Length: 149
Image 1 (cartoon, rainbow, N blue to C red):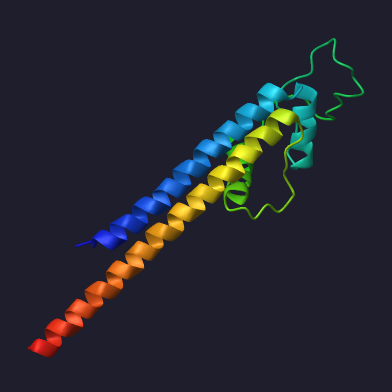
Image 2: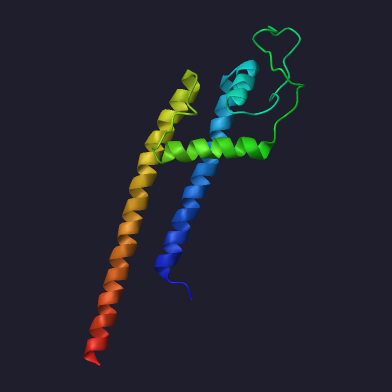
């Protein structure tokens, strides 16, 4: 049988993973909606992706959109891992600096993400404190019961 405290901790961990997933998806949505496709391709190149997200249009500046590879969509899983990694570092306020907001829309999103991270961190700390307090109280009750026997 799983204790209520363990279930609270499992639910908390699941909540953090879901929050990171949503933030990763929203980060990519903001990236592709607020950035020219050639700049998205350049961002992917900086993240060491091969090829491009989207083919340059014939009227795009060839020097700006030089992707050096035939055009193809990168593995969505690899892209998801990069975005998830970024969301996790932003939410935990670690911020390694290897991925950052490059335009106003991304910076606004990241500011909101960091504020959300502070709230999530405070919630995690309060939940952990409650679980530890409950475990300590249960242990004292057990010890008191054993002494009474």
